[in-house]
Length: 404
Image (cartoon, rainbow, N blue to C red; front, side, top):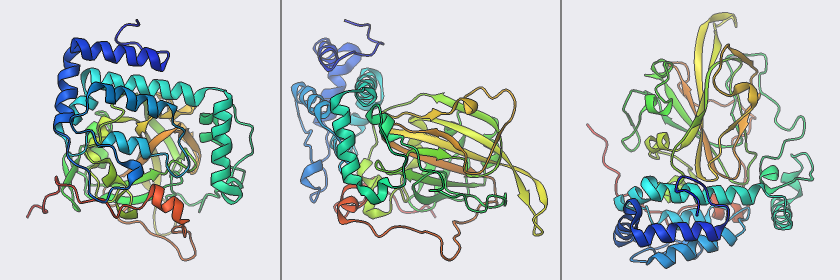
């Protein structure tokens, strides 16, 4: 058997490894799993059947069988989050589940399984080509018309498919005061007065900017500023771009973290308002990177009026959890790297992901749109039901009234 710090090469090897861990209570693995399932909190009554999974008092064989089913399952366009949500009921409002999934051998287990999923998604196999064909068919000719045609060598190759030239024209390319979306995403203002432990005004949750930026010397620049979340849906274009023109003065693409363990993953998809008021504090524990961009501010005449900084923090949430930078933006940045507004910075391979944008105080007070610009899409019911809707989601029991 491989050393405990090494990844498994097959599902059978993975199951054998965690079985031995359980039998020997390796580093408390059995103790933590048993405590997690004992303290499972019931999911909301109106949870759809396709994402139900009752972990209450389930034995270890159930966990092994769950991983086997997940490994053999092929994610579709509109159900790609189903198994992530099924697994999330183990950690839902459950402190014991959170400890199991995010620390010690439980963390190593999720990392190992994620590695196996990555091998699947990277493989050039008939199964991978069949999955690509299913996605292309489900996405339909209208949406696929935005992308360069295949062939794609693997599902991940397809997942980070490139847009055709001209399909995402950059707004106000010559105006450095205009900020553009970094990705195809759902956008929410998450806090507009960052401190080192800022209460987000909606639901009194906190984000530690220093932790998010791994104690970067630039973190102080964003205190008192604004953070905006840009959440990517699984079926969207999965490259992220620079929101402004300037120079990348610092970058990190190697910050490790957990793979699973959201206390309330379904709340992230609450009622179509994806990510609104969510507890973004926990994202500083997920796998991520960041770039700090030095940019120009303009006066009312459109002339340079000093320089400032914008932070872009790509976060890998669940499943493959990859945060990949193009070579020119990989750390360490020895001298400033010029970047154009809308220029590609990197991509996320299969899994959940988002970007958090950070702005200095007073520089980004609100999301502002011009007449005639896109603000959303009239969705197909199937996509909404699979990725957005959350009428069955209850408000989290951790929510508290705003502090006076």
